[in-house]
Amino acid sequence: MQNEEYMINDYGEIITKDSLIEEIQSLLNHLKSSQTTILNPNIMKSLDITNLNTIRDNLLKKSGNEIENNLEWLHSLKNKH
Image 1 (cartoon, rainbow, N blue to C red):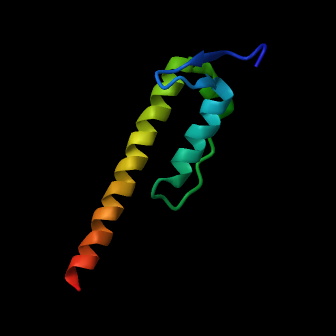
Image 2 (image 1 turned 45 degrees about the vertical axis):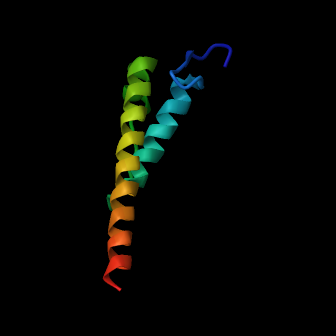
Protein backbone atom coordinates (compact mmCIF):
# COMPACT_ATOMS: atom_id res chain seq x y z
CA MET A 1 0.00 0.00 0.00
CA GLN A 2 3.04 2.27 0.02
CA ASN A 3 2.62 3.76 -3.46
CA GLU A 4 -1.07 2.99 -3.88
CA GLU A 5 -3.73 5.61 -3.25
CA TYR A 6 -5.83 4.77 -0.20
CA MET A 7 -8.31 6.38 2.18
CA ILE A 8 -10.25 5.61 5.32
CA ASN A 9 -13.97 5.55 4.51
CA ASP A 10 -16.96 6.39 6.72
CA TYR A 11 -16.92 2.84 8.15
CA GLY A 12 -13.28 3.07 9.24
CA GLU A 13 -12.08 0.73 6.49
CA ILE A 14 -8.73 1.40 4.86
CA ILE A 15 -9.53 1.07 1.18
CA THR A 16 -7.46 1.24 -1.98
CA LYS A 17 -8.48 1.85 -5.57
CA ASP A 18 -7.55 -1.71 -6.53
CA SER A 19 -9.55 -3.26 -3.70
CA LEU A 20 -12.57 -1.10 -4.55
CA ILE A 21 -12.38 -2.03 -8.23
CA GLU A 22 -12.23 -5.74 -7.34
CA GLU A 23 -15.16 -5.40 -4.94
CA ILE A 24 -17.24 -3.44 -7.47
CA GLN A 25 -16.68 -6.13 -10.09
CA SER A 26 -17.60 -8.85 -7.61
CA LEU A 27 -20.78 -7.04 -6.55
CA LEU A 28 -21.82 -6.52 -10.17
CA ASN A 29 -21.35 -10.23 -10.84
CA HIS A 30 -23.54 -11.15 -7.86
CA LEU A 31 -26.48 -9.05 -8.99
CA LYS A 32 -29.16 -10.78 -11.06
CA SER A 33 -27.73 -11.10 -14.52
CA SER A 34 -26.74 -13.90 -16.79
CA GLN A 35 -23.52 -12.28 -17.95
CA THR A 36 -20.21 -11.89 -16.16
CA THR A 37 -19.08 -8.31 -15.78
CA ILE A 38 -15.49 -7.48 -16.61
CA LEU A 39 -14.55 -3.89 -15.90
CA ASN A 40 -11.94 -2.04 -17.90
CA PRO A 41 -9.17 -1.44 -15.32
CA ASN A 42 -7.88 1.67 -17.10
CA ILE A 43 -11.27 3.34 -17.00
CA MET A 44 -11.89 2.33 -13.39
CA LYS A 45 -8.44 3.55 -12.27
CA SER A 46 -9.14 6.91 -13.89
CA LEU A 47 -11.91 7.48 -11.32
CA ASP A 48 -10.89 8.95 -8.00
CA ILE A 49 -11.07 6.82 -4.89
CA THR A 50 -14.04 8.77 -3.47
CA ASN A 51 -16.14 8.03 -6.56
CA LEU A 52 -15.14 4.36 -6.47
CA ASN A 53 -16.14 4.19 -2.81
CA THR A 54 -19.54 5.75 -3.64
CA ILE A 55 -20.10 3.25 -6.46
CA ARG A 56 -19.24 0.38 -4.12
CA ASP A 57 -21.55 1.69 -1.38
CA ASN A 58 -24.44 2.06 -3.83
CA LEU A 59 -23.90 -1.47 -5.14
CA LEU A 60 -23.88 -2.78 -1.56
CA LYS A 61 -27.23 -1.07 -0.96
CA LYS A 62 -28.61 -2.56 -4.16
CA SER A 63 -27.32 -6.01 -3.18
CA GLY A 64 -28.96 -5.64 0.22
CA ASN A 65 -32.27 -4.76 -1.43
CA GLU A 66 -32.04 -7.82 -3.63
CA ILE A 67 -31.55 -10.02 -0.57
CA GLU A 68 -34.44 -8.28 1.17
CA ASN A 69 -36.72 -8.83 -1.85
CA ASN A 70 -35.82 -12.51 -1.99
CA LEU A 71 -36.49 -12.90 1.73
CA GLU A 72 -39.93 -11.36 1.28
CA TRP A 73 -40.64 -13.82 -1.52
CA LEU A 74 -39.46 -16.77 0.61
CA HIS A 75 -41.60 -15.66 3.55
CA SER A 76 -44.60 -15.34 1.24
CA LEU A 77 -44.19 -19.00 0.32
CA LYS A 78 -44.13 -19.96 3.98
CA ASN A 79 -47.39 -18.10 4.61
CA LYS A 80 -49.17 -19.97 1.78
CA HIS A 81 -48.84 -23.35 3.54
